[in-house]
Length: 320
Image 1: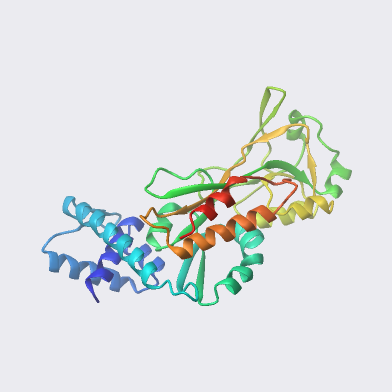
Image 2: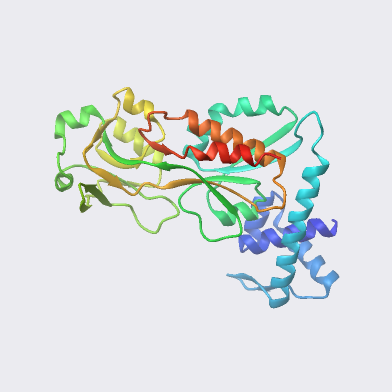
């Protein structure tokens, strides 16, 4: 194993916080991660990590080596991008991280268009949403909902998710339709608990004409399975507050938006994240342009998303 590969394993292990997690993201055996780090420590005559049964953390020398190694890997990626930019098109592998809704409803249905444009470029898509996973997994680009944490990454806003309260007509015929947020406690409310948040999202906030109301709704169902919750609501189970990625469910009448004269607070921005470099890698520039096209063509009536019209133009301006 060459030194550059050992440095890559060091960086991924430090970012992931464990050898086991780094091995999963790098798709290699955990013993290979441990061995590579041990070999690098032996070669450098330094202890790079403090190791305990519960925690893996960098030593002072390890911190310095980590930062320098990450810079070297970034420079190596830039060199690789230049070397693999033949006239006939892009080559190599583009590694993407996306959440399930963005992947299934916006990117994947259109991905064959991108692949036909760049037939020599392989694409690897992973269901990831955390910035630390992006680093540890060696991703080129991530599409995620939520304001990203402070980091050295470039974050370009694509759109904003619009939250709303929805129910199937069958449920509303039986239970009646709430006309004010204060009536929500009288209904069966299905509550989403995303895996990355500590508690279920059972406090729903609304605004109308400067008036705000915060309602704690009954937790008739709590689940971290977003798609499963939507299916249960479609079956007439109750009400849900969610950012939809399926405007067709609304336009077809299968779901009805309730409390439509109230703005539902809590929608999240969607960002494209990628590493800062002196020159934009061509494969990232190409995918940013494609992602801009995907979002621009999705939900043109903005029932579920508010588009950022400058994203596509800014993506185009960054093409190498």
